[in-house]
Length: 187
Image 1 (cartoon, rainbow, N blue to C red):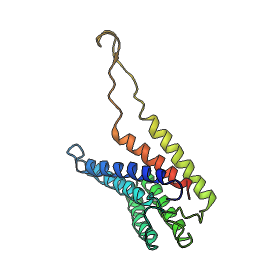
Image 2: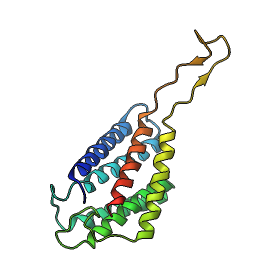
Image 3: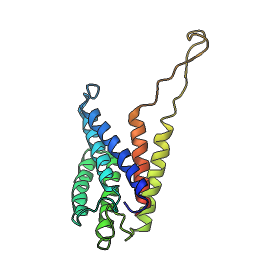
Image 4: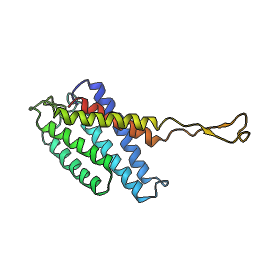
């Protein structure tokens, strides 16, 4: 990733943790529903791919053909997501393909992960930035617990019950959206 190495490493850790969580979720007993397992695997692929693309170029030089591997993997993922009718995954995979294609246009030695300074199409980058900004805010809002109001006298000491903690899955989705936003800023 182009830019401060610390930002790249923080994105690597964040995205890798989200990817591992999604892989574990795809195998968990609570996720017996096939559609949820498949979606969790898609999210894991996206998160781990983001972690790979966020590696700081100064610390981890990658071969020039790496961008084409990203294009192939995330192009296939976009086709799969379109067939499975997962529009968010289609947009995410297409954004990864876009960043990888920008990476192929980077001058030799200019870095990797679409962060080589060649730049992308400003309008497309802006649209993707807007999408991920809205998605991050919307998924972040879902993390705010709503108070559960009980009938008067049914809760000890008042009428408001304890609210369960926000789901870790929503936090991972919020973090991944913020990660994509950050990566797109450097295109």
